[in-house]
Length: 426
Image 1 (spheres, rainbow, N blue to C red):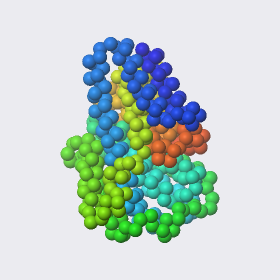
Image 2 (cartoon, rainbow, N blue to C red):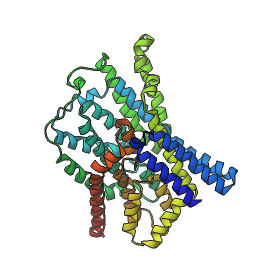
Image 3 (cartoon, rainbow, N blue to C red):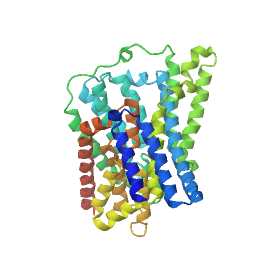
Image 4 (cartoon, one colour):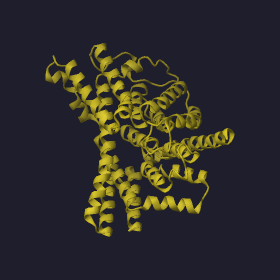
């Protein structure tokens, strides 16, 4: 079973990677791969009731991620339809490519820690569409956004799914993870930021509307209301989770409902044809649904590997064959760029208990850093990368050739800084 299941996943992964060569949408490949992985699993195990129960548990977790993605994309799309981002973009007067790259990188890094890497990526990529007209330049900016979002999410307990998992599981505490990882995470951004900025010269060419032409005739007041209510909702999600204990997708669904009411009230006096493009219903039609289906297929496939015990077996093999904690965690981080970091971290949590590695142990902090930033090595290695890939149509091999080397340079630089930091502070 293990061999066949792995083969199906590898073939599906190859189809996704070669999407533009075989002319097959990656969402279709991901969905087929995900379902086939479970088909193989159920045929070999035979206990259909048990398999259905496992699948239902996984889908419960996956649906939370997908509803979060759907709601976040809708809120961002709604802000965009109200020309809300123009309030920000018209105030970014910097046109020098290098300076703008640094501004975008640092804003993404800190915003990701407050929101999360996925939401931040969606917001910043939408912003870049307004700021940078040249597609080649925008692809490099988008690649940096992926790196910055993942780096920013790694040092915050609410910035990345895996860090949140470790936080909820009791392996790390909020203050310790921030204090321990903020410097290594910042280094993992600054190194690629410096290297990529060396490629740029001159000024960016902005879209025409940024130079004064608004895409809507809405009052400035309406634009501000939608923009700031949208940002407030996104920022409030971690607060909602902290105080209610409910998962983040419940907070963002509540926020979407609130914004839905706000926009309906703002345009209540308009005719249907006039307000149609400004409604949540219209925003739902405009979001990239294929990205969500692609995400679903990938996560279903990974959950099959997890249920079959393949990921846990691989983690156990690393522990026995290598032994060195630093090397193991670095390899786990690099694996998270190939296989989603969520099941990998979940497997590691199952391998090592709090007796061997107590809360805030070096091992858990380093795992949070590597799993969070290692996904930047490939465009499909993180939720931020998948979102950017869908929004900007970034090709797998373009990212591999143009961005991966910078992401890896940052990843290893930050890892060395963390190791050195721990040695010095001991």
